[in-house]
Amino acid sequence: TELSQVADSLKQANIKYKISAGNIMVPANDVEKARMQLAAQGLPNIKPEGFDILSEDQSFGTSQFIQAARYQHALEEELSRSISALRNVKSARVHLAVPKESVFVRNRKKASASVIANLYSGHRMTDDQVSAITYMVASSVPNLQVEEVTVVDQMGRLLTDSADKEEVLNSDQLEYTNKVEHNYISRVENILTPFLGINGFKAQVNAEIDFTRIEKTSEVFNPDVAATRSKQQLVERISGEGDAGVPGALSNQPPGGSIAPESSSIGTAGEGYANSVFKNKETITQNFELDKTISHTQLATGNVKRISIAVVVDDKKDVAEDGTLSSAPRTEEELQRITLLVKEAVGFNAQRGDSVNIINAGFIAPVVIETLPDVRVWEQAWFAPIVKQSLAALIVLYIIFGVIKPAFNSLSKPHKELVGIEGEGGEGQAALADGHSAAMEQDEADALPKPPDDYEIQLDMARKVVVEDPKIAAQVVKNWLAV
Image (cartoon, rainbow, N blue to C red):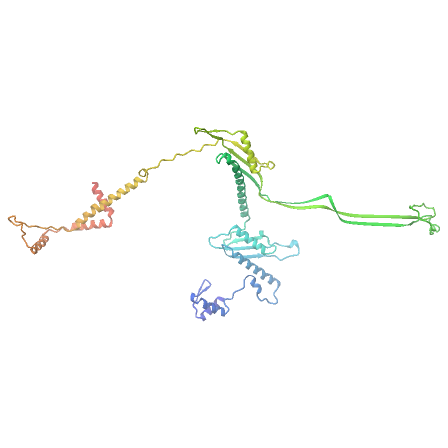
């Protein structure tokens, strides 16, 4: 195989390598050397992709079927490259099902395509990207409709689902309806706010939108205007003498010279002479082209079928000289004026069934909530627990460092006593010299009784308890003081 050939080539060049998951890994320092070595031996053998496969040398006996298969494979590779260039798409594969063309219409089959998109982890393909892929593939293959292109991700989820498209369309329609309604509401607010105030009215609009797609094709003939399309005229004229006289030899003899009469006459049998005959025949065939108009109309979607407007107007507010506020209902004349303004602002159309309803009602005055007075710091709920905890901490610290620690320090130091000896007679002179007194103090110290061993052990244990767990020592002292 090609992998073993590459491994043998690297081994011959004394380049260290490692095979991992079908790939050959070399040290970073030997990358360039390995590439030069493999390129000299024509390795690896890179196969052409896309339309590059068509530039390969083809044998003389290559059939038309093989050529068509190569072209289709090249087209699939090129489409896969284009789709892989999109964002969020790691790789892609395209499969085309292009039927053989037929001269008979009833035997023609539709072309179809399927796209498998391998997305990056944690990414998803947007609806715009799916639409772009379907249109790109449909535009690249002859006789391929957009509806015949299927897009699937690596998890097997169908991305070109018609149900999803209908759901997206419904959401778009709802959003468009809301925009139209807010547009009408803003018109009403702009016209009523200057003299009613911001809080002097409330308006709501309900719009019925027609999202039906309608296409009309009409053919109209005008009989008053006619144009000659074709005209055929046939004229046939016949002139000569007719047969006359009694059948026989005498009657069939040619007549003598005579002048032709001005009008033809038909003789009766047995008169003995011939009559002259003139015939004119004229046929006219004339075809007229009537004036015809063919129109194709496609009505835009999103037309407003009907709007309903409801406006509630607050009572009229008056402020007296003493500052008191009074309210009075609005008159019918004022309501009529407001109705007229609203109709003009929204483009009222009675033919399509628009309705405007404006009523007067007193608004409820907003409840004023009195602000609470500022609470002092020591009156707040969090202050008392913090003070208690702080006092407890200070008491514990005082007991530890002011009572326990000095007591243990005094117990841990040895007692020293100086013995003064007064001479007899009350003279107050020293009985011993300096050297003799020092020796005397040492002898007296040795002569003192030593403390028992149990006391030393208990003292050491108390020291360890204070050092290792001062909380227990503090609790013991608290219990002592409580008693």
